[in-house]
Image (cartoon, rainbow over all chains, first blue to last red; front, side):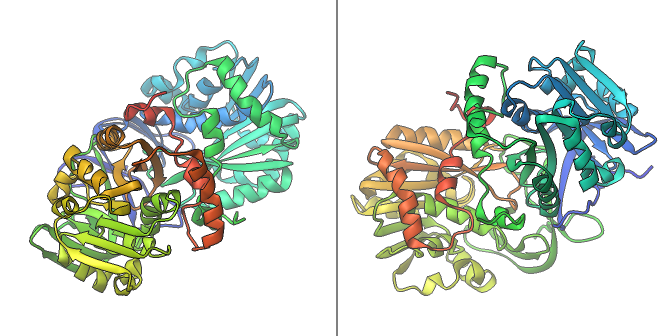
Length: 295
Length: 295
C-alpha cells in the first residue's frame, strides 16, 4: 500500500488530491504514531495519532475527523437541525461511522436515533481507535445501528423522521450518489411535514462548487434552505459549510426559540450557541458570490 | 541562503517554525516562480508567484500577504476602525510595507495618511512585485511615507491621530517591541480623545497567547476594546484576529452608524460589511475560553 509519509525528517501525513477548485496548497500533519492502515470493501482506512490534532481518521487519503476538533463539525452538523426543530423525536443519521453525530444527537431527548452506515469496518475501527468521539453512544438504548446503503434505506420510509443528518464524506467513493436530486427527493419524502435535513457541504473556499450544487438542490426541493459556516482547523480549508433544508416554511419564532431551548437543555456545547446560529449565516461578500448567493 | 523548497516532485514553500502554541501542522504552497530572494537590514525578504494565492510576500520565512486574499486582512484591519470612527481625518499606519493598508484607508475621505515603515526595502520591492496590493496608493497626494521606527515616531505625537493602524508582523524580528504596554501607552497618547487603534493579533487557534496578551493590554489602557475574527485562507490558521481599542467609551450609536456610512460611501468592499462587523465579534465558546474571554 502506498505510504503517505513524504515529508523529510519526520513522518507527515499529506491529504491526497481531491477534486477541489483550488490546488497548490497542501496541509501536512505530523504523525506521532500510525495506529492502523487497511482496506474495507469500500475504501482505504487509516488511523494516525498526531501531535496537533490527536487521533485522526483518514478515508481514501482524506482526513475525516480528529479528536481535537471533531466537536466543531459535529455540533454544527447536528445541533443546527436539533435546535431548529421544535421537538425532534425520530432521528436518522446517514453515514457518520465514527459515532460523533450519534453522540451529538443523543444529547437531546430523542426517542430513537437510527444510524445507517454502509461500511461496518469504519464503525468497528472507530470504536477501537477513536472512542473519545462516540463516547459510548453506540451502547445507548435509543441508538440503532444499521449496516446498509443509505440511498436504498431512505426509500423505505415515508413521513417518518423529524431530523435527518447526512454525515457523508465528499462525493467520491461510497458517498458519490448521495448528493443527487433523486436522493434528496427521497430524503424529503421520508421526513415528517415539519422535518429538517442537515448536510455537510464542504469548504466554501476550496470547493465552492460543492456547496453551490447542494444548496441549489436542497433549495429547489425544500420550503426553506440556509447555509452556515464554521472553521474546523484540521480541515484547513477556510470556511467549511453546512446546509439546512426545512420541509415546512421557517417561521422566525423557531429561530427565536433556539435561545430558550439552549438555556433549558444545558448540554454543554463548545462551539454551537444561539449567537453562533445567527453569526454562522453571515457570509462575506466574496464567499457569497462564489456560491452564487450574492444579494 | 537556505532554500525553502523541501517538498518532493515540485517546488513548495513551507513556513518556518514560529512560536505558535500549536505545532505539528505545516502548510505547503506550490510555487510557480521564485521572483526575489534577498536580505534587508532587518529581515530576509522573498517574493514567490504561487498557483493557489498568486504572488506572495514572505518575511523571515513567514507568509505576510498574498494577492488573492490580502483584501480580507486589509479590510478587517482598516475598515473596522475607519467605519467605527465618526469622521477619521488623520490616519497613521505603522508597518504595512506592502501598501495594502494605505490603499484601504485611502478609500475614505481621509485628509492625510501617514505610513511609518522601518524597512524601506519591503516598500520598494512590494511596489515592484505586488503592485496589485497597493494599487497606486503610494502616489496618492494624501499619502506620506516615512521610513522610521514606529516605536520612536509615535512618541513625538500627542492628541493628533483619529485612527492608528498597527499593520505589523508577528512579534519576532523588527515588530517584537510593538506589542508592549509602553508602546500601546504611547499609541493612546498620540490619539485624539475619540481616536481608535486597530491591531492584527494573530491566529486564535494557533497562537491564542498573542491575542490574549494584546487584548489584555489594549483593554487595560483603552476605554473600550473588542476582538473580531476573520478567515484568511493563505494563513491557514483557522480564525485570525483583529483587536480594536477606543480611547472614548463606545456608544452603541457608533455601531449603528456603520450601516448608514457603508451605504453612503459605496467603496466596493469584498469582505467587510456592517453585518460582518457584528458577526465577526461572535467567538465560539472554545475560542473565547482560549483567550480568557469566557462569559
